[in-house]
Image (cartoon, rainbow, N blue to C red):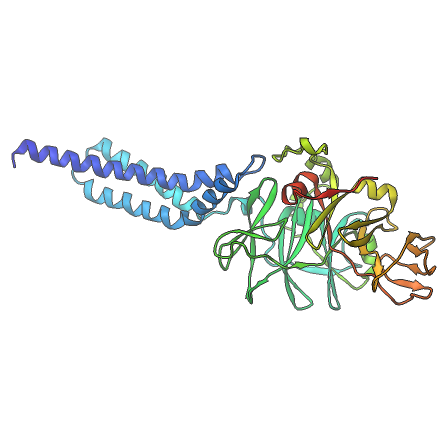
Length: 408
């Protein structure tokens, strides 16, 4: 081989290795850029692009690691013969590739909203929570706990165990959804982290399988557990004063002193209502931030405008074949939903007087806000509570496209 051919061969080898290093740097950067661009607030996410972005983020750490190894190999093979300009270029490519590899290990959403990994609690009498602040209330067996919404709105997730049941208490302020899910799937105990956002609703990731779960539905939308469904744990969104009156010995989630200054202000709803939404609700004729109480019974869903509930105080209705009542508490803010029948006997209710929430016209029995008769022939009997949660219309419509809407 002539000297000219040797020089050309070296140049070809150098060019190929530089090109490979450049491609590796681009791939490493893309492992960060694609998920950040797709999985971000206030932009619509299509199912296919979201799945692609989640796949890139899932593969990012090892893929970016391979890219770093490729650039290091290129530097090893070229360093001795490379010119100063080529060496500088290789170092720049290594820095870019390495930065991508490091950033693929970072959960940017947990940098914005720090997790509450070791939640602590205090007694209801000790808790520094305003009486009109809302809490997400959970009772399992004899154990009752309250999770203040303004605390949950920052952390989004608290992994806890109540009454021996492992639960994930979740709250998404952008869509106003507070839901509690069991952390056990097919016998496996999961621990959840905040993973991003999908069309205005939070995404969760379990550490055990790296599956991604939709907060509003509890469905796994990506990963080994895709298609699995978390089991809903009953909860109520109540004012702290009402919850405390019902559970004077209950436990309240304490604020994390490291991040309490960043918690949502008391008027957080007014701020959220001004944020853009990405689900088009124009055809429904309902504003995207119309606050609803969503109910699903036997696969059929219905949304009740909160303003209608506050005005009526008591709504008797049906969802499918199920009669139900939507009841406003004496605090004028807390809401519960009960079956409107007791052992197949349909009851007609009216607003109670004094400290009683309800009276049924059929027997004249008086009922409290827990759905239990405390006076009359049905005393001691209780109505079955129906799961219901608040949700902005854009999110409820997005996940329940066939939902009916209550009209006065």
